[in-house]
Each structure stands twice: as C-alpha cells, then as structure tokens.
Image (tube, rainbow, N blue to C red):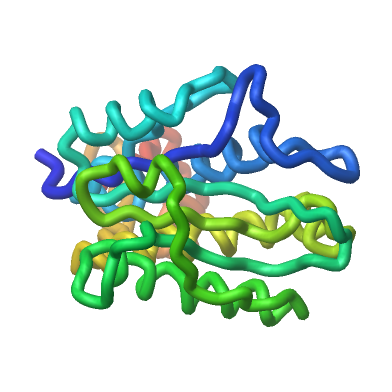
Length: 236
C-alpha cells in the first residue's frame, strides 16, 4: 500500500488552451510533463501514489481539481504551468505558494524542495530564476495541505519555447520535480534489482550470471561442445 499521495495538476486543458505562443499550447506541454512525472514516480518511488487531476486533453474546472485532491486526502499538490507575458523578453522559472503561507507552513517546505533544483536547471540554460513568490491562485488556496504552483518558463519567449520542445530538458524538469517531492516526503529511490540469468544445458544448470558477457561465454562453450539443448532463463 502506498504511504503518500501526490496530487499532480496539469494546468488548463480542453477548451482552455492556457498560454499560447510560437506554435505551442500550455495545456499540451504541461500534460506531457505531468504524465512523464507520474511514470517516473511509479517506477522510482513505489511508496508514493502519484495521481493526475487530468490525464487527457479535457477541461477540468479549478474547483474540480482541488476537490479531487482533497477527496484523495493527498499529502501534497503541485500544479504545473507555463507562463506568458506581454513582452517576449520575459523568461525563466518561478514558483508560488498561497499568500498566507508562512515559513512554518508545509507549502513553504515543499516550495523550498522544488524551487532551488528547478531554478538551477533553468539558470544553467541562461534563463532567469524569478524567485519564490506568493499569490492568490485558486488551486493552491483551496487545497487543504502543502501546495505549490510552478511556472516553467515563458511560452512567448523564443529561448524558453525552444527549451520546452527539447525532450532532454523536459526530462530534467520531470526528474527534478519527482525527486523534490520524494525528498519532501523523506523517501529514496527504489534500488533496481540486478538481473540474474540461469544457463541450462540438457536441463542441467551450468551457471547463473548477472553479466551478459558471462552468459554468452557459457552458451558459446556449450555450443562448441556439441550441445543443442541450451536454455537461458531470467531469474530476477
């Protein structure tokens, strides 16, 4: 059974495209990011149950988003967005908590975990760290727990827009958000098991190997000795 519930909110959707610019729609980019985050959490942090407030291109009201998360009794809520501005020179990353959240709040603690590593990703690409901020956004106001809204770049800025088209950059944001939430929960990645292969010749095991070159060597030896009944089985 999962220990923690992570509500992940892809902004906008359906009839609401969100910010648009230079051929991109906010609703599409943030949905892809959130789906990748869920996949990452499911594979790396089985102790965290990551749930999406929307998993397809459908309109979901602000009230329904937080209603879902509150009904799930989620332990934290992260809403993912892309910024826009009148000026195409605006660029970079910023994060928000609700206006009344102070330094002792859970939202502040979650923001601390998320902001600094994400800002590093963006500033390394020459984009601005626009800072940790507060705002009266409905989704972070209505959720009953730790909540943060992220603005990943400006869709109208050419360089930010180009970064948001790059899968390597998207992946960096995905893993950073996932790892930050896990750190907030005090959880570590699941250590991947080393696969072990059993080699059988004429129904008799001749060895069990974790390195594929050793498997190949055992099979080659059996073939050279004239054996034809050779099986390789994955043990774990």
